[in-house]
Image (cartoon, rainbow, N blue to C red; front, side, top):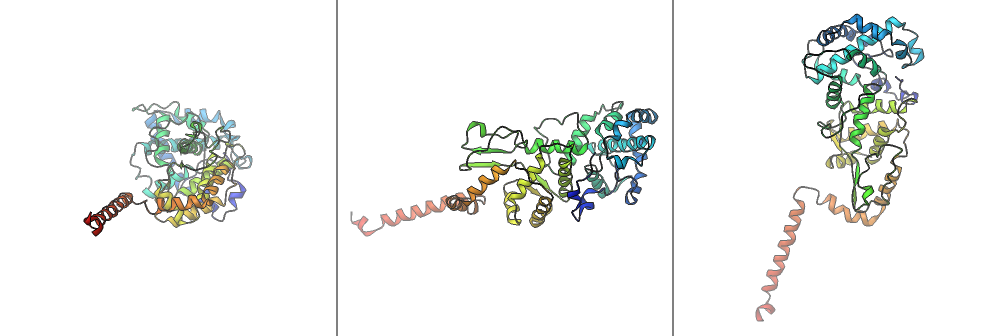
Length: 383
């Protein structure tokens, strides 16, 4: 479980995007004054989870305590000096049971208003996906392996439903038609990243391209063997839709922080995609264009705000070269005046629904008017 890189911490709003709002998980933000109130909720959720899963807290503690050395090496060494084995084991037990109970209740859409208000529930969902607020997924698996729910719920079902419904980046219903999330992952943030990649991997070229360019299914992996087409003439880049809301900024920055972690994934997949989208957005007009093409789903209301978010995220990025060839092709295509003149009327004059039909109807009326004029000319009548 890494800490946010120093480069990202230099951002003046670093605490806003990297520190929990309501509740802490793991040692990095444990016992901070503004998070202490939520500590009183954890025991209540633990008792509920243990009762529903028919487990004994002492047995769970012994299982976790026997694996506590493996937990220690997951965190920064300096942060671990404050916690002995017993305290760390109880922290993992309380945090793990709370997470599983919260995920289970959210997936089942159970009422949690007796513990948290609606806005606090949304903030807890955000806190669950912060880079410095993670616990090892092995702890969650250890707690759940002895669970016996009456309805037969499995951890796989719970995590798939939760990540699908609460990720805050992917559009509603994105999981339909996509493969199930894997059994193994490092933590919840890692799981959300996997879900995001399974969605953005739908990016593809469409048009008059060789057969091996029809789909770049592994587009976001630096080891991909497919190459982009030599030009973009008669081709369309299809980009999957992502949602932009008040939490997108935070979730994106934390996924990017995870990718910058020295022991994290080394493909910079999400970093590359966000960087690529950022290169397409200069101002609100660009956001409007991407909305009209269903690439962005804007729940912020303001296109200017979306443009600002992408600019701020871009300031924290080391831009990988994965999309460099595509960006060069786009620039060449845009600098070609012939392409510009040919596409301007197509996209700006005929983009409204029915505009092409109206144009054809106008041409037809003009043709009929010309024919009528021809047949009524004196020279034609004299014949």
